[in-house]
Image (cartoon, rainbow, N blue to C red; front, side):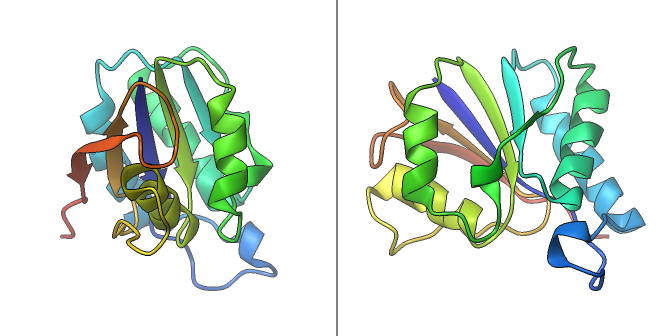
Length: 154
C-alpha cells in the first residue's frame, strides 16, 4: 500500500477566512513541479481538504496526471484536524495508491505518526512537498518513508 501526502502550494497570505485562501501563481507552479513525481503512478483516489488552496492543488494534480476520477473532499484533512481521527478513516480504505492533499501542521504530524508511531517527530513539509509512504497497512508506526520531495524554489 502506498500513501502520498501532499501539502498544498503557496497560498495568498490573506482572505476573509483561512479556508478561503487561494493559491498564488508561484504556488500553482510549485504544485505542477511536484505533480511530475506522481506521473505514471496508478493512483486509485485523490482526497483533499475542503479548504480552497487544497482543492486547487488537488485539481491541478488531477489535471496534470490526467486522473479520470473526481477529487474527494475529506473534512478530516484540515490544518487543525486530529491525525488519530484521520487514521480511523484511512484504516477503512483499501486503495493501493492514495493521494491526500492537505496542510501543515496536520500533514507533518500525520506522516510522523504513520512512520514513528507517535506525534513527537513530525515530517518537515514545505508548500507543495510530497511524501511517499509505503507499508502493509495505514497504521501508526506501520509505514516507512520511501521518498520526500520538496519543490525547487526559484
